[in-house]
Length: 121
Image (cartoon, rainbow, N blue to C red; front, side):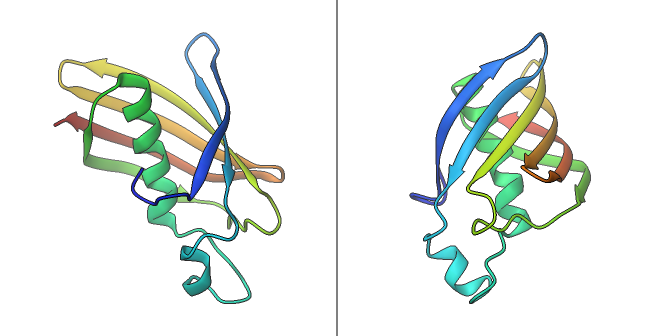
């Protein structure tokens, strides 16, 4: 976990081809004091990192981002409005590479859509 104490996994599971992970975000985390005071917003790069960390947990190995083909930030994730963030990840392994298609959601809808490629390191 790159950001110590930023979140904890409160639930995880898998449907046929989608990994579902619910994260409880620590709204008191240091990152929110600077981004932004009195109006906390989770930085987009942090949201992207959550998917990488989830893929590392599932495949039990370290990964490096090779490419992010499609990243769409659709809404702001404010931990004062929602403590939980659900990640839906479709993962495909091909040798040393892992392809991810993901959607992050809060209680009001989609926050982020991402398609990315990772390499085992």
